[in-house]
Image (cartoon, rainbow over all chains, first blue to last red; front, side, top):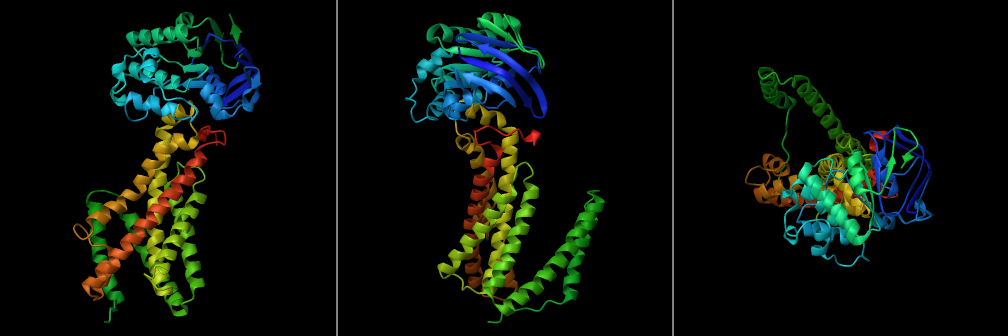
Length: 213
Length: 258
């Protein structure tokens, strides 16, 4: 089991968004679905401790996540945010930047990482500011893969994209799953996308416990 | 050489004609600045007159303890003033106090240690005032920018934290840009000094009848001292203040919740 959440409550600002949530997330691909404001993104942020719950406990691989060094945890459980936020420079600069965050990470195979993210090698030297949103999102994916995570958390990876870009990102994620077996947890408001991308779905309702299928 | 000149209150009053011009412009253009101009004139008169007597007293005593006390008061007032410009930065007062205090101590200590000025009140008080004033402006601009950086760039910072970056690494670009913001004004004005504007000390000395070469040399010393002071204060204030945006676990604080 990857994650186990026991009676987890969380607030965003002062507003409670998750109340006494119990859930388990297995290895493989899991989608978290629910209406906007139901706390899906908050739940994702709890999994790599960008935020902490106000009550309850989260375990990662049978160990409380607070027992892990928080920086090491985030390299094991890397999160790609909803809006692409690349640093200034080329796509390759971004990938190297991520790899260099930990002295123990080997130099990145940029071409391979771009390929995993569904981008050809010509993107390495492209200026990140000049990419389309869909390309930026895949560059974010390549950058996250550079830290060699065990799990990838994706927050609404296609919410800002048109249909073609959405297909490209979904294909990249499906290819990534096939080729690496990396576990992913993807937040989406679109149940059809959850069907396409994930083997299991957790439905979050505003301050309700989840229903699993 | 006698560099003292006598200024009568009548001459000061005559210069109010220019303030009248500023008020007239404000009225003509409906800029609604008359009240602020009035407050500025009254406050500058009262504050400078009061500080004139204080400085007179400190010069007469020539006691370094009095100098230290006066500069400490400037540091505290400067830190509170700069904090009002750095509203987006949580807990900005302590970083500002340390930044202004240290930049004042280090620069005054160095100018005395290097033999540039004697450790006497008549040198340390005016130089200290300039140092603290410029350090305050630089820190205020730097922290104002830092607040903007964290408000507008929170996504980028959190995206970096999300891959296991330390809070220090994630905020490095924001801190760097804030440092540049705080110091670039003085660097630019130092570059153009003598061409586009005459700095205040030099103007004051020329008006008081000093030899232009002496006026220039003193001005150069002060410009270089101020560059050091401004760099120290902007560096310290940003380096200390960025930490307040994060928890110990490298999480961005939810500032709206505070």
